[in-house]
Image (cartoon, rainbow, N blue to C red; front, side):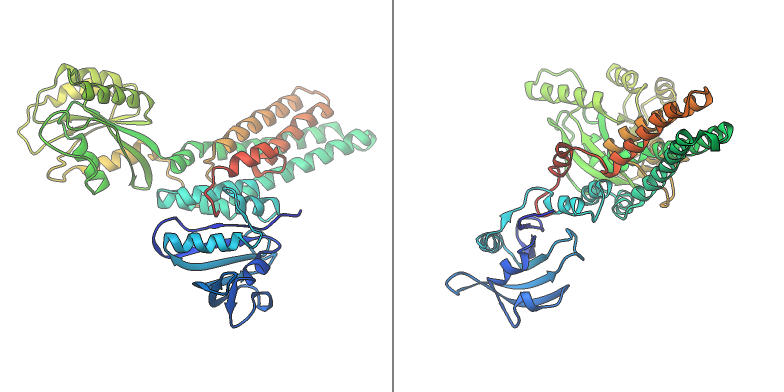
Length: 457
């Protein structure tokens, strides 16, 4: 498979100590060699070595002082010749270096094109390629561990084992059909039933991790709701351990949605502080309240905040009724104040929802809240690092289809249908599992997946 030579900035844009421009393709070394001046020509150096020198323009003027890494195919990320130019991380410097490289007949890379080439050149499969973007976007250590495992091929290896079992079953069926006189029907059916059930059980194990895997990958959309001035913004700041929201004693201070990520015991929360929900004549505040109600309806987790120092209001009771059927935690804040709230009434209205009392001001009870959040989603089922998590929505959909199809194969075997009819469902399961790792996917899907990547990756 022939590709042209591409280049892109592989480090974040902006000012920094160092920036890296990555070049990959058949003329990568030759192209950079034209503008590199050092002790050796890059075309003569050993692979996987780094060299000090300068980049010069067509007039011989020095453009930048650089360190240039040369990596020759096939022992590179893309399995092509790769050159990485390390220059100073100023915006102007990076642009001038990239422009100079592009002038040598090199094309600007598309988003994700380096990883796409790694996939198309057979260095990684599609599930590993998709895990690269998960690794970049990981918000917690556990999410990063899941992504690293997938990049290293943990999911791919498991899918490969399942597909190998299915290939053996299809081969056995072919032999049975071609040479019926050498086969005992009961033996074939027992083998098909046993192996198919094993494949089905393994797929079911992966699907059982899907909810947790998706949480680790995407985070939990968490909305903080409550009446004005109950401490929602203070709670947000406490969980973030920095001041992101304006806190005052004036009700209605928060007018818009404030969204931040926070790591709660390995669980990533996409935390949203909303405007206090109440009836108001203020037009701007009313818009914020409507947005709060909208966010509430879409949330994975709701943190309902009440005031320990005030009696329950009708607005509090309405909010308790709204969140009771949801994944929610009732938080009674401001325990540093004299108690006015009836906790027994709160418990009755909250039903089975967890109830936590805290004082954000005195930093009391925050650990209990964090424990309640972690328990709500991972209680009794926090898996070991050895488990293969499934977190990608595309993978989950394909595995659900494969689980259904192999189940139909088992039913066909146990119903006594001819083995050639069973073979259809087994082959379809094999194909679906193949789509997870990219064995049979359309060009449009490949383009869609890699378009989500950043430039330079």
